[in-house]
Length: 300
Image (cartoon, rainbow, N blue to C red; front, side, top):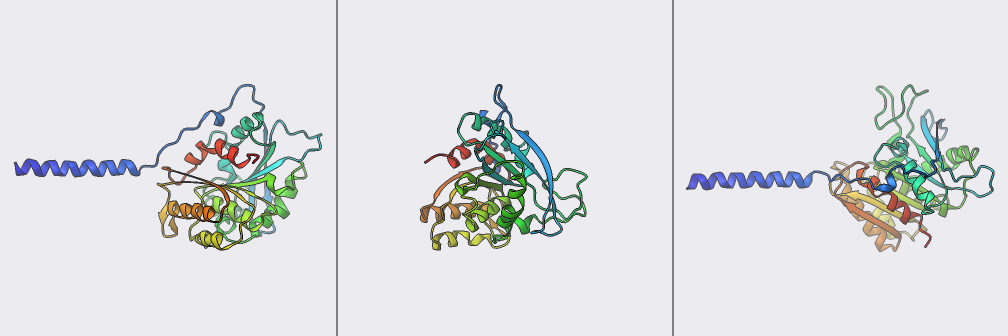
């Protein structure tokens, strides 16, 4: 009898461990209809470019520009602007977020303004590209990603203001209204988006952060305290994270994002925080991306 009881307890323990492991596995979120190409919906145009920066010396990067079908090159109205860090991940129409597809659908439905999308990759120390930029730099190629994205300074905002926005404005009429400018990114690109708006609310006032790295990579863990002790800035902030996000020597991503949300609430910001069960990827953020844009671009 004792032997059978012992075996039963072992099986029960293994079952509990298996159940725990299953609970810890990041949830997979499905893309909705607004992330799918639809018949009779006008499609925007995406063009690809490269840029060698003087603000971040010796770096070169690929970037993409999306112009919606509704943009009138002969008109007088200025288009809204939305900038994306790690642009290769956001511009991919078969990826986890599929920004051009979502923009096509929401602009056609008048659920967001006519918006020029700018998809920037981080700077690499390379003269020219033989393969498209992705998450991992080519072997032997240095990347400036963490310096650009994780640093708490106005340098990246200055890069946008003095280099990228004027370059794109040579081809498109872009708004100067910060209320009509949004910036988005995931992971280190997410904290970068917040830093740009925090440092320069005269340039950008709408922030969308996916799995933002508000941790101590380069001091980003201080933001919740800064938000609480600083006069509120005119920002609208959407945060997304998941319970299965990273936990490492830099910090705990789920806790950091919850601290950010609590600080924004305390300081009475216009904010939204969606906390799910996803991991450190664009799956959850991509699934809720259409609704995130509706919230971010809402009129009130």
